[in-house]
Image 1 (spheres, rainbow, N blue to C red):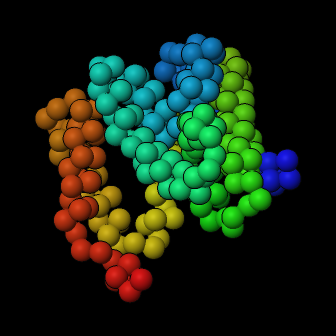
Image 2: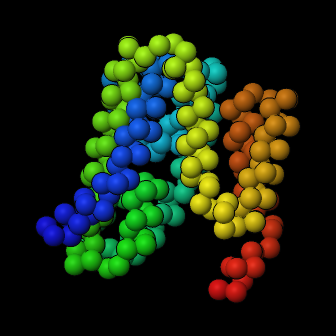
Length: 228
């Protein structure tokens, strides 16, 4: 129980930012045509902010559902890596608990957990973080969906940049410490710009991500990484 409480406590500062982004998502989801229930359930089931913003942006553009599903799958591939890393610390935890914990893992809980020291009960510690972040994200999305009925149209239109803010917030820590990642981001953006002139928006984004990932594997490691 102590580890669970510690997990809740350490996640509280992150929850403040999480609920504000959740509200932005809820507003954007309603603007894209989703109902209050649909927007809230999307956050409760998917639990992946960046891919959710991507999905509703593509929905607004009339992109095919198949393309949207493929795009969110590519974006969320990082969760396989995060969950695999976390499970190494939970070797003796029952499988059903691992499945639940892995399902709710997000970028924030992964970062906090991976940087933390070993706890008395790592599963409970991660569970506390996941629970608070899950509730905060779902609640923020619900509030955003409701607020859409009261927010002026001009303000809701301005929230269209939320998807870009979400991606930038994820990239900034990596960009600050890796020239390689910066090159991959710029290359991918350039490829998407070119492809978007000859193919649908959603398709160009997915193809650009795959080409960018391949390009990244061809680059040499950063000097800092080689020293390590």
